[in-house]
Image 1 (cartoon, helix red, strand yellow):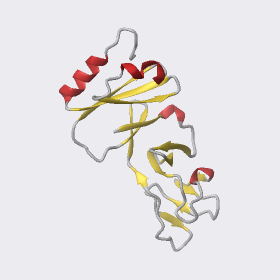
Image 2 (spheres, one colour; image 1 turned 90 degrees about the vertical axis):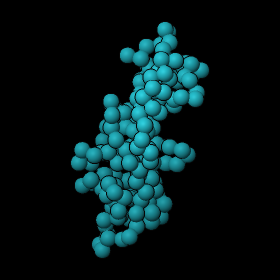
Image 3 (cartoon, rainbow, N blue to C red; image 1 turned 180 degrees about the vertical axis):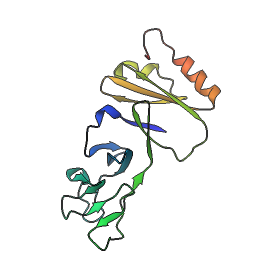
Image 4 (cartoon, helix red, strand yellow; image 1 turned 135 degrees about the horizontal axis):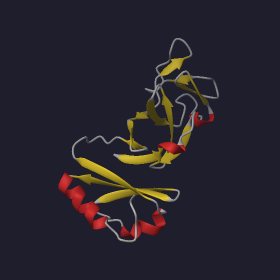
Length: 162
């Protein structure tokens, strides 16, 4: 699992961001979160310049519609065009990219400090982190014992994780 955004960053419509060097967008339709490539399969137009309509992302160029599974639903008959969709979930006010590997244990903490202020204190071999504004999400993965050991090694007296 990898944290992507705080849910409070999303207001409505389409939220675009970069992940691993590629543009993606996130939206919420029918109480479900969807993350898809920010590129129309037709002319490669950024879908984030379009809009959300009836749970579908609408491309601004020819108004092609893509549902939350990435399938083109308009124009009729529906084309075989598809947009790559990645699995995401919401936990503790954070949208997470679900990992291919479901095994193991993971836990996260949020530190109310900018990542540049704490990155040297984060154990490099046992956890990952991402900074969003003046907050840093740190997540630990592995067996439950490895996670506890990593969290305990990060217990710093000068940082609050509350």
